[in-house]
Length: 116
Ligand SMILES: C[S@@+](CC[C@H](N)C(=O)[O-])C[C@H]1O[C@@H](n2cnc3c(N)ncnc32)[C@H](O)[C@@H]1O
Image (cartoon, rainbow, N blue to C red; front, side, top):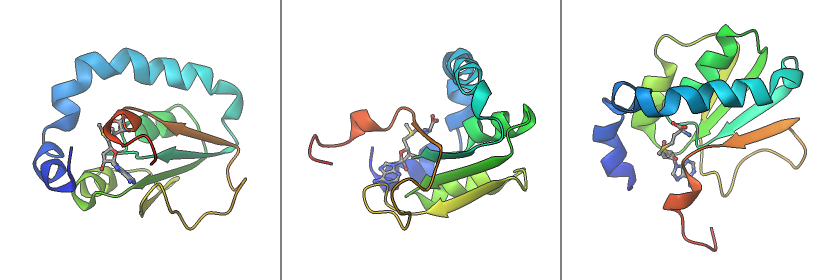
């Protein structure tokens, strides 16, 4: 999807996909349990739903990066101060290698060309 399409999709993304994404969100939290106090980056975080759920479960050092202003606008609503959001291209971020203990990415790679 293009950045323009996300302008519209951002408004309905979470309620529309809740039923499908809910079990996956929970599974990711389970998998990352041992990283609760570690620095985690969600690349292409979209509305930040995964990170907000992690904050509620006690994760402390959370970062989300997305290119879409509209998706990040939703992400920054009702957010937790433990989460830091950045509007950047995941293919060219400000972060140096090994800045995070764990990096997650969900439902974004399939939209990209192989080279990206
Ligand atoms: C289908 S959404 C998935 C959002 C989130 N990961 C989730 O699990 O709900 C894909 C996201 O990837 C973002 N995205 C696409 N290309 C990107 C890029 N080059 N850099 C950063 N974010 C990008 C889009 O803006 C969109 O928010």
